[in-house]
Length: 159
Image (cartoon, rainbow, N blue to C red):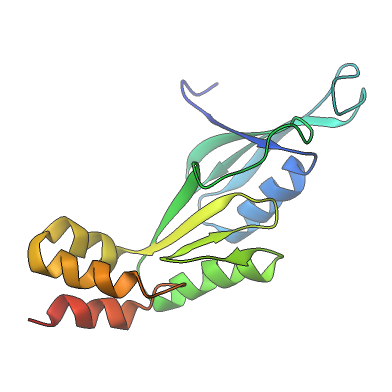
Protein backbone atom coordinates (compact mmCIF):
# COMPACT_ATOMS: atom_id res chain seq x y z
CA UNK A 1 0.00 0.00 0.00
CA UNK A 2 1.31 3.43 -0.93
CA UNK A 3 1.44 5.78 2.11
CA UNK A 4 -0.55 9.01 1.93
CA UNK A 5 2.52 11.06 2.91
CA UNK A 6 6.14 10.15 2.22
CA UNK A 7 9.30 12.16 2.84
CA UNK A 8 11.28 12.54 -0.40
CA UNK A 9 15.00 13.18 -0.01
CA UNK A 10 17.03 14.34 -3.00
CA UNK A 11 20.40 12.65 -3.45
CA UNK A 12 22.97 13.18 -6.16
CA UNK A 13 23.37 9.47 -6.95
CA UNK A 14 23.68 7.56 -3.67
CA UNK A 15 20.08 7.08 -2.49
CA UNK A 16 20.46 3.31 -2.33
CA UNK A 17 23.67 3.44 -0.28
CA UNK A 18 22.12 5.98 2.10
CA UNK A 19 18.93 3.94 2.50
CA UNK A 20 20.93 0.78 3.21
CA UNK A 21 22.97 2.65 5.84
CA UNK A 22 19.82 4.00 7.53
CA UNK A 23 18.23 0.54 7.51
CA UNK A 24 21.32 -0.98 9.12
CA UNK A 25 21.66 1.80 11.72
CA UNK A 26 18.18 2.58 13.04
CA UNK A 27 15.46 0.31 14.45
CA UNK A 28 12.21 -0.13 12.52
CA UNK A 29 14.07 0.88 9.35
CA UNK A 30 14.41 -0.99 6.08
CA UNK A 31 14.68 -0.70 2.32
CA UNK A 32 11.44 -1.77 0.70
CA UNK A 33 12.00 -1.18 -3.03
CA UNK A 34 14.57 0.00 -5.56
CA UNK A 35 13.37 1.40 -8.88
CA UNK A 36 15.51 1.84 -11.97
CA UNK A 37 15.03 4.58 -14.54
CA UNK A 38 13.02 3.41 -17.56
CA UNK A 39 14.94 5.86 -19.77
CA UNK A 40 17.65 8.49 -19.63
CA UNK A 41 17.01 11.50 -17.40
CA UNK A 42 18.93 14.62 -16.36
CA UNK A 43 21.82 13.34 -14.27
CA UNK A 44 21.33 9.66 -15.16
CA UNK A 45 20.81 6.93 -17.69
CA UNK A 46 18.31 4.20 -18.36
CA UNK A 47 18.79 1.44 -15.80
CA UNK A 48 20.37 3.65 -13.11
CA UNK A 49 18.78 3.57 -9.68
CA UNK A 50 16.21 6.37 -9.79
CA UNK A 51 14.32 6.01 -6.51
CA UNK A 52 14.61 3.93 -3.36
CA UNK A 53 11.71 3.37 -0.99
CA UNK A 54 12.75 2.96 2.65
CA UNK A 55 11.70 3.66 6.20
CA UNK A 56 13.63 5.37 8.99
CA UNK A 57 12.27 4.52 12.45
CA UNK A 58 8.92 3.68 10.86
CA UNK A 59 8.69 6.87 8.75
CA UNK A 60 8.24 6.20 5.02
CA UNK A 61 10.80 7.87 2.77
CA UNK A 62 11.83 7.93 -0.87
CA UNK A 63 15.39 8.62 -1.91
CA UNK A 64 15.52 10.28 -5.32
CA UNK A 65 18.74 10.19 -7.32
CA UNK A 66 18.15 13.55 -8.96
CA UNK A 67 21.72 14.58 -9.70
CA UNK A 68 23.80 17.44 -8.32
CA UNK A 69 21.29 20.28 -8.87
CA UNK A 70 20.12 20.46 -5.24
CA UNK A 71 22.13 20.05 -2.04
CA UNK A 72 21.03 18.99 1.45
CA UNK A 73 20.69 21.66 4.13
CA UNK A 74 19.76 21.90 7.78
CA UNK A 75 16.32 23.07 6.66
CA UNK A 76 15.45 19.35 6.75
CA UNK A 77 16.62 16.93 9.41
CA UNK A 78 15.66 13.66 11.01
CA UNK A 79 15.25 13.94 14.77
CA UNK A 80 15.95 10.69 16.58
CA UNK A 81 14.83 10.55 20.23
CA UNK A 82 17.20 8.47 22.35
CA UNK A 83 16.65 6.91 25.76
CA UNK A 84 20.17 7.12 27.22
CA UNK A 85 23.80 8.01 26.54
CA UNK A 86 24.58 4.59 25.06
CA UNK A 87 21.89 4.97 22.40
CA UNK A 88 22.87 8.61 21.77
CA UNK A 89 26.50 7.57 21.31
CA UNK A 90 25.59 4.63 19.06
CA UNK A 91 23.64 6.72 16.54
CA UNK A 92 25.97 9.73 16.68
CA UNK A 93 29.05 7.57 16.22
CA UNK A 94 27.45 5.58 13.39
CA UNK A 95 26.63 8.74 11.44
CA UNK A 96 29.87 10.61 12.11
CA UNK A 97 32.00 7.47 11.82
CA UNK A 98 30.62 6.69 8.36
CA UNK A 99 32.02 9.85 6.78
CA UNK A 100 29.64 12.27 8.49
CA UNK A 101 30.37 15.51 10.33
CA UNK A 102 29.73 16.69 13.86
CA UNK A 103 27.85 19.91 14.45
CA UNK A 104 26.40 21.61 17.53
CA UNK A 105 23.51 21.05 19.93
CA UNK A 106 23.02 17.39 19.05
CA UNK A 107 23.15 17.90 15.27
CA UNK A 108 25.34 16.02 12.82
CA UNK A 109 25.36 15.31 9.09
CA UNK A 110 25.77 11.98 7.38
CA UNK A 111 28.15 11.44 4.49
CA UNK A 112 25.39 12.36 2.02
CA UNK A 113 24.75 15.72 3.71
CA UNK A 114 21.46 14.77 5.39
CA UNK A 115 21.14 16.41 8.83
CA UNK A 116 20.31 14.44 11.96
CA UNK A 117 19.35 15.59 15.43
CA UNK A 118 20.32 12.91 17.94
CA UNK A 119 18.21 14.12 20.85
CA UNK A 120 17.98 12.41 24.23
CA UNK A 121 14.44 12.27 25.60
CA UNK A 122 15.63 13.96 28.81
CA UNK A 123 16.34 17.11 26.78
CA UNK A 124 12.92 16.95 25.09
CA UNK A 125 11.27 16.47 28.49
CA UNK A 126 13.19 19.42 29.98
CA UNK A 127 12.07 21.70 27.15
CA UNK A 128 8.47 20.54 27.62
CA UNK A 129 8.68 21.29 31.36
CA UNK A 130 9.38 24.94 30.54
CA UNK A 131 10.50 27.62 32.93
CA UNK A 132 13.81 27.51 34.76
CA UNK A 133 14.31 23.80 34.10
CA UNK A 134 14.03 24.31 30.33
CA UNK A 135 16.40 27.29 30.47
CA UNK A 136 19.05 25.34 32.40
CA UNK A 137 18.84 22.38 30.03
CA UNK A 138 18.84 24.65 26.98
CA UNK A 139 21.87 26.60 28.23
CA UNK A 140 23.73 23.34 28.88
CA UNK A 141 22.81 22.02 25.41
CA UNK A 142 24.11 25.18 23.74
CA UNK A 143 27.66 24.27 24.83
CA UNK A 144 27.57 20.75 23.37
CA UNK A 145 28.18 18.94 20.11
CA UNK A 146 26.90 15.45 20.88
CA UNK A 147 24.46 15.72 23.79
CA UNK A 148 25.80 14.66 27.19
CA UNK A 149 22.82 13.05 28.93
CA UNK A 150 24.34 13.28 32.44
CA UNK A 151 25.03 17.00 31.98
CA UNK A 152 21.45 17.63 30.81
CA UNK A 153 20.09 15.63 33.76
CA UNK A 154 22.30 17.63 36.15
CA UNK A 155 21.11 20.90 34.62
CA UNK A 156 17.50 19.81 35.01
CA UNK A 157 18.03 19.09 38.74
CA UNK A 158 20.05 22.21 39.53
CA UNK A 159 17.86 24.75 41.27
